[in-house]
Length: 205
Image (cartoon, rainbow, N blue to C red):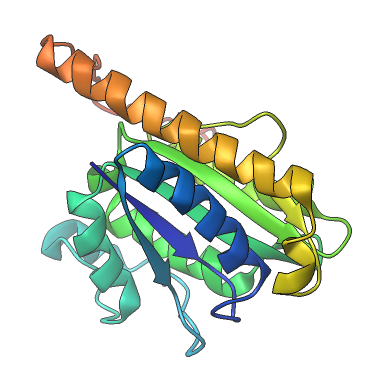
């Protein structure tokens, strides 16, 4: 079993990375392989709505999104982490997730996922909400912890002082590992989710 953890911060090894590392350690202790995927600093172009990915199977903008979707296909669970920018998720991560979920949603569906948020002081709840909405529209199981998945600090060394935040990350990792094992046991027993073809209804007549 493998979990992909996405670092959506412009800083490769800042507070978001620190939180993800704590979760990864708990997953590893439960026998789950992990990989932290940093989206980088080059900037992620937003989805243009061209719908070409529905025909080609991948985004026409050939960047890290396509690379990640390939990795996502082989993963069993996902954790997306973001710092708080103006009381919301980082713009580059939002663009990244828009395109990942538009072009590669089929690879992530019916797998567990979680949001992790780092902030200096406030805005964690709205950021947490923004990220979780990607999961709930794609038949994914949202994994929680013993508190909202957030850590506080302006620098990595400050985040390491947030003992409650660090514990929240560890519990998240343990919960993710537990759910992954439950799903695997279900598959072995022949259990699969009931699936329906999507019905799309427009409200303008």
